[in-house]
Image 1: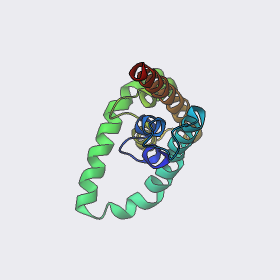
Image 2: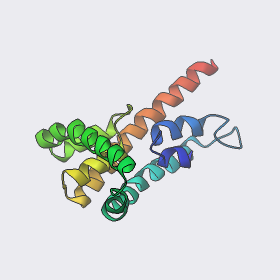
Image 3: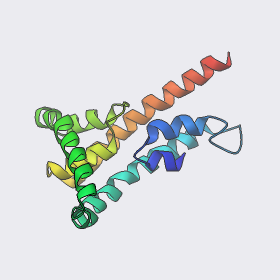
Length: 152
């Protein structure tokens, strides 16, 4: 569940439901609060790791055409997907964008938007944390309700 929550293929949106299932942990008596905490913290770790990558490693990888094409597509998606929300609502727009538990939003795109739009890193970090929290709570509660509904 930690790996799903830190991965760009799911973040906590996948890590939480996976951790709550018997397949996600070794013991079927899973602590639902521990699952939430682990997935939430793993998802928070994405921001500093991505910022390090974008500031230090990205410029070296841009030399390769294959990487450059993918990076530019992601940058355009992050910029135009979040720019209007951030421009209109400030950091609350970033919270909303990261907090939506749907594909294409989340901390990866929020971090890329922070980098591209040259936002204050500390404020953007806290906006991402709040957004991750809202997204994680929504996914956690929905997963618990769905599992309770399936067990009746």
